[in-house]
Length: 239
Image 1 (cartoon, rainbow, N blue to C red):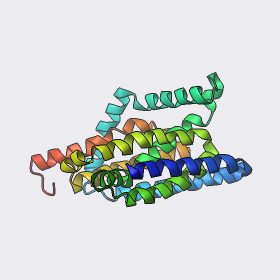
Image 2: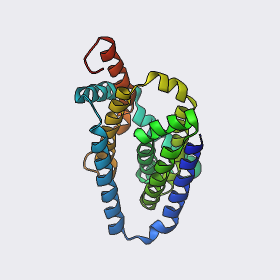
Image 3: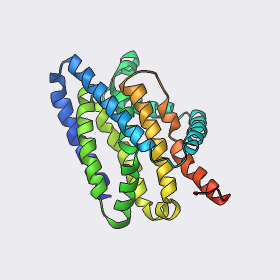
Image 4: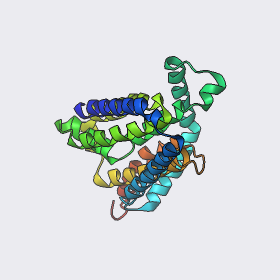
């Protein structure tokens, strides 16, 4: 779990720097930064989506996963967890808490930092062989992203390390089992689904074009490899 620990450290350092110096930026500059982060996140999402070998798998994963997420009310639970952290450590209440940036910062960065092939593949490599080079690269990127986000959304960004620890650390601990089950096609389709989810984050939280309950699509990441496995089992060509 060396890579995950390094990732947590860089997010904390970057986020802290953003908290200290972020207030020096005027509002227009912050809005421009958020727009830039949104556009960049969209570009990453589109690039990840191109990994798909069959876009119908991505569509099916999003539809099934989205319905499952709505049933489980994942986004509401994530927001409630963010509100709990805010109330526990920040002490805001009622309407002020609802309107603050804490939950938005926590929710947006938590998803951004753990969705993507670098998080999954890097954690598997780290768990199997101790090779954390991929997570080290991701850590640098996340550190700079945390700096920018913390300057805009505040301290909620720092608490995303809880999700990083649980997600990446969990994958590293289960690396042997995961590698024995997942093949390249499964990872590619999962990556493509993750790319669409990142697009949702950009549209909803960063560019604020349209509110999307992005968190409810998280089960889609698990649905994608299941669909690939089913297609392989029934003998569909290419899987």
